[in-house]
Image (cartoon, rainbow, N blue to C red; front, side, top):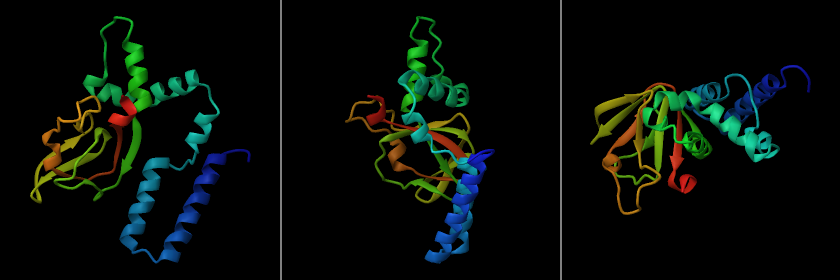
Length: 182
């Protein structure tokens, strides 16, 4: 493909999206959100990361995963284990391989009040509003985390399930499921 192949793939993906949205006759507000989502997630470059990772050995995948989550670990203090007992890198590797990147745009609803959650979310950028009975009670921003810790016993649920959450700014976050961390 040559120079800036990922940029060309991104433009091709955007053209495909535009054609799809016209074909489905999506409303302009939804179309705008979709374009913002792609801009946030891909930033003008489109890579098929899963295919790239599949070609690499486990050691290289772990090295890239650790690199990709450094900023999040820096912003979320409890993820930054520094016991200096020889297991800090193991912990970081385990966290890095369990995290899954998520992207949301303003107005996206993460979950509704009363909905059971299984994931824990860590906010890298942006802001989340927390609603109780339709009223905003607080907001969270970079470095905050919420949801169900993946290492909690099944029978213990936190009060987060009584909240509704939505994003009020563009946000990059990661989630960790108990299925991915056990």
